[in-house]
Length: 450
Image 1 (cartoon, one colour):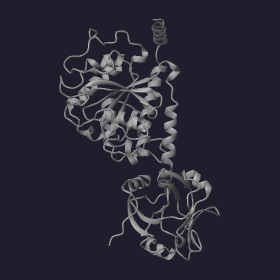
Image 2: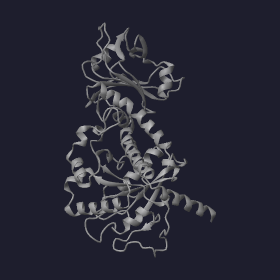
Image 3: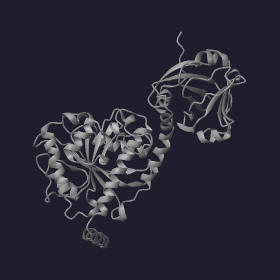
C-alpha cells in the first residue's frame, strides 16, 4: 500500500514554490515507518537534498537540508546549507553554514556551537527556541510535541549554495521592493500620479499586467480587467486603472492605462489617430474605441485643455516574448509607426515582454540585474534591432493568468518592471522645459480658482 503525505494540495504547492519549483518524493512518515532515529535514517540516508516537515497542532514547520542526511556514527557535522520555514506563513529564516548532526538519538542543527533546532523522533518532540519561533511567526506557546513528521527527497534543486541563498532571499527582497514603490512620489511633485500607457497586440498581456500589479499590492491574485486570447481585442474601452495598497488602502501614485490591442490590418484594432490624443491626455477614462472612427475634439467627453497630470508619462510596448521572432512585417511596420508617434510626443518608452516561462532564470542571484544568458536571447536582440530601445528598458515578466496563488519571484519581476517605468517617467518630468511646468502650475491654480 502506497504511503501518502499529510500535506494538503495547497501545502505541497506552497512548499514546492518555496523551494524553487521542485518536485517532492515522500521518503519517511513517522506514523508508518516507526519513530526511532534509526528508522528515520534508514529511509533518508543517501537520498540527496531533503526537506523535513513537522506537523504541530496549530502550524507546520520544517527544515531544508542541501545534500545528504548526516550519518549515525559520524563525529563531524555535515556542512550543508539549511533554512527553516513555517509553511502556514511562508516565512523563512536563513542560517548560512548551518550544520546537521545526529546526537543522542536526535537530529540537531547547529549554528556555531549552539543547537538552534532539533528533532527527537522516538519522543515525537521538536525543539524550537523562542527566537526562531518569533522569526517564523509561530506562537510562543505552541506545543513541542508533533503530530507527524515527514521527510521528502527534493528533486530538481541545484546543488549550489548560491541557489539556496536565492530561495531564502527572494521574499525579503520582494518586500523591500514593495515598500520602495509604496513610498514612491513623482519627480518634484509635478503631478500627483504617473500615467503609464500599455500598447501592444491582441493577447500580448496588457490587461494581465495591470491585474498582476494590482494582485501584488492587493496581497492575492485578482482579475479586475477582462483578459482573453481571442483573435480580436477583448479591450474595447480606454481604461485608466488606479492601484490601491491593500483592499481598503490608499491609491498609489501611478496609473496603468489600458488600450485596445494593435492589429496588423488597417481599420482593425486601435486606431493610429487615437494615439496622439491619448498621449496628450485628451482621451477620458472609459472612452469606447472605434477602429475606423478616431476621437475628435467634437466628441462630448474630449478633454480640450489637458494638463501635465492628464498626459501619458511613459509608454510600455507589451509583447509576448514567444511571438517576437514570428511577428509579421505588417505588425513590425505598425510598431514603428506607433513608435514614431510616441517619439514625436517626447514620451519615454520601455518594452515589457510577457509570458516568460523560464522566469526563474531572468534575474541574477542578487535580483538586481538580468542574467546575460537572458539578455542575449534572440527575442531580446530582435526587439533591440526593431525598436532601438536600450537593454535596461527591455523588461521581462510572467503575469498572473491561470494561477490563484502568488509567487514572490513573479512579484519581483512585476515590481521591478513597474519601478523601471516610474524611473523613465521621472526622467521625462525632470527633462520638461521650464515653460511647460510653469504653464501646468498656472492651469492648476486656475482650476482651483474655479
